[in-house]
Image (tube, rainbow, N blue to C red; front, side, top):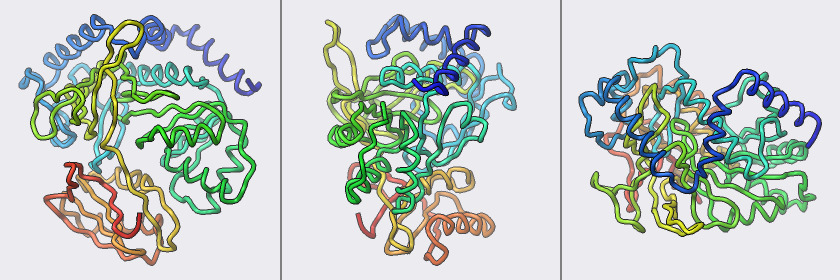
Amino acid sequence: MKTSELLRKLTFDVYNMVTKSKLLELMRIRRENESSIINDTYVNERENRIKQHAIDTTIFYSKNPDFPILSKSNIQNHINDFISNKYRKENLYKITTSGSYGTPSVFFRDSQKKYNQIADVLYFGAQNGYFFGIKHAFIRGVKKSNLSLIIQNEIHLSPNKLNKDSMEYYYLKLRKVSYIVGFPSVILNFIDFCKYYNLKPLTNIKGITTTAEPLSTENQKVISDFFKCDVISRYASEEVGIIANRFQGESFYRINHNSIKLNIYEIDEDVPQKEGEEGRIIITDLFSYAMPLINYDTGDLGIIETVEEKGKQIKVLKEITGRLVEQLFDQNDEKISPFAINVYLKDFKEIGQFQFIQEDKATYKLLTSNVLSYQIKSEVAHGLKDILGKDIKLSMYYTSEMLKLASGKRPYIVNNYKK
């Protein structure tokens, strides 16, 4: 452990002990209750508690005590009805996300929920060598404040450009860190770059956590073999937090039973799906008291199965099938991360649901579920041209029905130009 890492970790640990931080209790619970094995009593108690709280303190659940399956649009169309009257909205933490289906959404969480998400990150990260203060690179669209980057010992790497210049910059920065967090497609692109130019392998990386995209076990091994370290494939969302993890050498995702309850429902009906068959991933967040999310449709598809571990039968996610995102190319035919589009458009609540389609070289189409004003169209076009190039051809259309694949999925990024 480097001195800069040790100082940050010790400061963090001492602060939490002196202030008797909520993190200590949350971490204790995780150590006592292995998150991959269901403690039925714990989960049931927390589920009953959040459900009663929702009925007692929110408009929506007081009128719907049977807890129907909810989509993002259900919530966003009546967002104030989901916020508990025990909290003042202006005192809550606001987060925005577009998720897997291109629906820009706003959610609110309280400090307890925030602490719980931090506890999850530290608990699961510790199983792969991650700790607070470790020098790490975070590949993500939104950059944190400079103060946060310094405190957390983090280097921000933008996924927007995947060309030679960007990958050279990655190589220089990644030589200085001990851990990587970020999009697997970008990491795999970096590996291809290193191999193509016969660059010296980086041996300083102690662990990697991939996020936001599905990672096949084959590609998990490619990343592990290149960096000579273990790789965690994390399945999470901004509004819920960590849902499940697939650890090195395993073929399934371990569900985060400490924080959520997960069920699989049929794709076209609100009834539980049979084990081993694909269905919608439905979550009940056990810690979302400010804005309860009960029987929340994540927009992702998955398959549940049962495995035996330590003499117990446990439910795991065999596959997560709803998060495949296609690659894009800018006006110069340079690769662009689809998350550059996602991160930019998610702040335009006027858009509703969107689908961004590349039809040809430097030719794109944006479909929206809401009719956009001239001003919003101009703002959107300006930002997209900053990402893709000033000379692109961009058209925008309102549609009541997004492009649907045979599987039933509605991808928010589509590439009809080239794969």
